[in-house]
Length: 308
Image 1 (cartoon, rainbow, N blue to C red):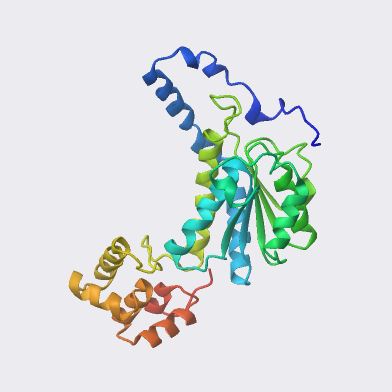
Image 2: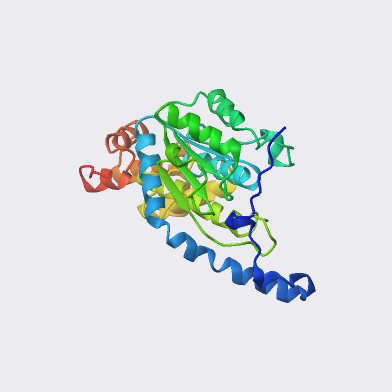
């Protein structure tokens, strides 16, 4: 039987005095209160930018050395990790294994609660082994309340085999018991929720924002963006074909129809098409140039690759 721990000292479990009478308010007043609380999230995140930046650098270094990013979480935290991971391949044309989200209880837990799934640290270790975690991978534990045994177990195992580790939480790190297993702590202290303990609210929003910051910045640092264009997506549906066509037209000066033909000639890879047109080369040569410049097409246009 799992030992029950009094978590009343955890920041995300504390009572928010602002919402003591929330059940007596009008619909608009409730919505306004939620909005006001949400407005504080970005300020809490801003205080952690140095730590988020360190996390990004760790992830980029792993990617450059054949490693991966693995999220581990339970409940809302786990679902948000899976969500962020699932959006990376279609957005940046990377293998689905590059960023992977693990959730306590497995796929079933994505849509419904799995009783007790998060209560066992050994389950975190088991999932690390199931995905064949390697020492050049990065494990990011996500636990807004900071105490999830499943996440602690994953972090402990990851550190034991030499992985770099990151821990995202919305409560102070002191006393959580994972200090020795974590390289970078990201503490986004959004404070007590309007509905006590409901971390799907401010804490969940903060989680989504930080995960977006880490993976988006990492992809930019890997050459997946040119200017502010999503240059490295593959046009696999009508919307993305249109977006890719417009990007090619904007960057090369071609008409929309000409840009569409260029996209087709590049097997619907936007980055390849842009280099083909701007450098007046074949698809094969365009891909060689992109590889020579470590994926940064700007340097293919402007000269030797700069160190990033």
